[in-house]
Image 1 (cartoon, rainbow over the protein chains, first blue to last red):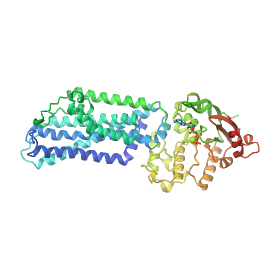
Image 2: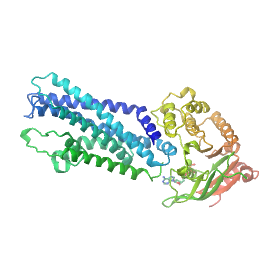
Image 3: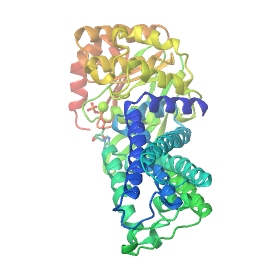
Length: 259
Length: 236
Ligand SMILES: Nc1ncnc2c1ncn2[C@@H]1O[C@H](COP(=O)(O)OP(=O)(O)OP(=O)(O)O)[C@@H](O)[C@H]1O
Ligand SMILES: [Mg+2]
């Protein structure tokens, strides 16, 4: 088991795309926090809480969580590159007991997702801090909100790394899986959370927002109302997704013929 | 009489109506190169994939050292396989690909240099494999199969993409492995070449075994190519 974990980790580390996505992830986090800081600090923030409010500043930092998409993508790569390049054959020849390979991949997906989100958090918070430092009357965020955001980053990275492995095992075609994941995360899921909040709060993105424990709202003029599950329930729900997608990975990998 | 290392026992694999392998029973012995011959679509690759646990047979089974591949302890140290030239990641160098395999199987890293030297790829070891020619990929596949220093080698068309020098090299290489007592099962449809390489043959046609045994006995004075044509042109 340990040997397979090391081997799977090597595959991820040797791949250039891993590093490209890691850098993209950090950049995405930084872009989100600094853009939010810029927007909320400007006059035209549509009456949303400004950077002179604790709520405003905390939502700036909370945006560091947004790069969980990249944890998902790296998870997808871990699985789909085996099929894309035919390395699944070699992998299962070394270890015909496929559940062991799968466990190793799930563990590596979780590790990679966790790492990606840890780095994105640090870079995102730093970028938010720098952008805020150019503004005046900036409120101070509570330590607990920063820790909450850190926790949300880590749990989302951990879970979505695993979800990515399951999704990759299910879809197998790399471009399709990644395109699907990007569209889902950036578009479909956001729209569902926006318009069907009662369903949206149960989706991974909704649960991650629930873990963040921040007030989420739109411009007062739009009169949007959001509610999310409690942080505890959201965390459990996310872990449930990790288990669900591990199950999907098992169902789609353990018995199937390998081409 | 030596014991067979590889056994197919009534192996059958169908894909819906298409029966790829039909009740195949055969034995492969150590210290010999056994050619697994048959026309395109005869079921060679399917049978080998069943043997290696990648494909689940519809019925029957196949064993290596009396165990199913799945049940072998450290299979990589006992069985080396070349299935096609796609067994490694194009974005990784040969060394990185082999390091992954070595890590997964617990083979000492020192062995990487050894196998790369065996297949004459020393100058390209740190090149990404997407820049490899077909022949180089075949050599790397062979290196991957040799990594665990296995006593059984299963090779599906390893001569694909090799130039004449490479083919001669491969022939001598396989023969030398057999001389060390290893079991070599090699599929091919390059018959003239096979005639000079193999000790035994298994000939399959439309999924069924049509001849097996010592190559001279099976050919009975004919060339391997003629024998093959005689056997596979018959209605089955
Ligand atoms: N995954 C699959 N799904 C459906 N049919 C398949 C599959 N794999 C193989 N077959 C069929 O099984 C038969 C045997 O194919 P196989 O690849 O084993 O032949 P082969 O002897 O290796 O041929 P070649 O010399 O061309 O490599 C063919 O009719 C092929 O179409
Ligand atoms: Mg074939």
